Image (cartoon, rainbow, N blue to C red; front, side):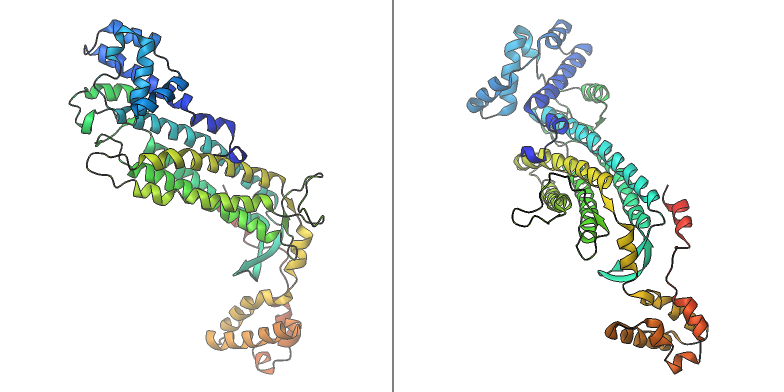
Length: 430
């Protein structure tokens, strides 16, 4: 991942140094259990634990000759172990180390994302409660509908990200897998007790049946969940972008005193952070299809999945971590303009209560079809001629046969409080 979207803590997980550290711990644990069950001498296991180390530059140099990264790694570590290195990587195959190590990296990544997601959920809840009763117009298809509150709007995102947290927890569990079963997954050259021991030490679960590799449906699930989280991030980012439009301006990203919005137009204050999140979400979702295609491999294994995983696994997880962190900053620092919300709420005036009038007429005995046609005809008249809905309605003699002018006035009064907000927050925003 380019430095612009990279945070140090998660970047470290995907360094070669961390990968080889994980591999080394797996190899050492394998040796320990092999010694415990009498497959290799115990002094050899102690020597491997004591002397096993690696040099990334040397491994890279060796790989140019071997054309095989694990063999280059084994040769390099063996040099430091010395005589007892003949018991290093004993009875296992490359995928035992690569895939178990990959599981750990994905688990480490998931835990960082989990923490950032938790923070976002708390921030959304706090803002939702703060603006619980801040009235604004609700929109469907981008068109004014009926009043909601800004707190309720944020409450929807709060619950969505709570669902994402549960999904992520399932994905982390799904990928926390150890597979040490030897060539083609038969345990013919490695005792199953070794896998169980390594899994316990590394806080992983043993694969049900490996095919030499950990089946890639697990990885597809993990990256699909990251894709869903990315889409949730984008949904909130797009909402902010819409609400920041000049003619709306109900919400705005923070704008630093020295910040510049345009190289040509000094007045500009653009929602660049939210737009950036939209772009990153597209990238995060791009891993979903390749991760699903990686499920389909030849027989017990091939390496067609390897190259794409080496590219997207670090980049996608890093991009998601960065996106969540950026979204947290936006939510914490965003400017909210209740007065503009109030102004926009009044743009269509009493028209926002057309449904209330429709329901009232049906209660008075009119068919829904007749009531709808009466209300719509008058609403379109008010809309097209920029007239007060109430003024138009009180001139409709057909309507006044069913309802009084005073009743009309009460029905069309613009809400100053949503009656069910307290109930929603008590029961649904926990």
